[in-house]
Image (cartoon, rainbow, N blue to C red; front, side, top):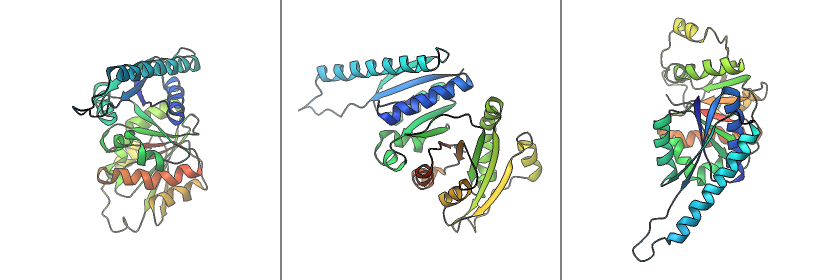
Length: 273
């Protein structure tokens, strides 16, 4: 079974992401890992954390994890194995270690409100977007799982060679599970107009994507997110996949995902090349 990892802090948006992940796990026959990380403040010699307070934090987290597990197992009619993991340390460090151990299908994160801006600016889990080399699926607070019947791959010209090939195994799996239809949207902005796109020979392209029969689209827009919104104004999608650049990953998610989820609770998945 493919593991899906869900970091939870028991907020409404994190619980919704866990429900979304449970429905996804049921659809693809995956197992679910609910992970809560207790972040213990650095204790000084003058004021160490009281053992009773630490025990209270652990007991509360364990109770909440088991309660959420029971809810999700009932939701999936006991057909999805749900495992609870409690760690102490940094969120990003512990989740990264777990990903290296399990090799997850995806890490599912919840977004506060209907945008990602507040989530990315304040949540400790935001740092996961910088360090994980696994698919990260960000679910808006109001997001409800639907089978990925139509997937939009939004990319810049150079992603055609440098990013899209990395998405093929995941796309093949989604097509097998959901019969997904693929739209590939190439967006050229002023910033990318003069860049040399990575070469991806047409015969390789056709061979790689032949089974998908994708619809190819091209737009010019001032900004990446405007190109996506322009496309979604006339087309439907159940999932948007993007290829963030490591050197500007945080900015990419803020700018590209923020406006998208203001318009519609469509989940956004980042794929790392």
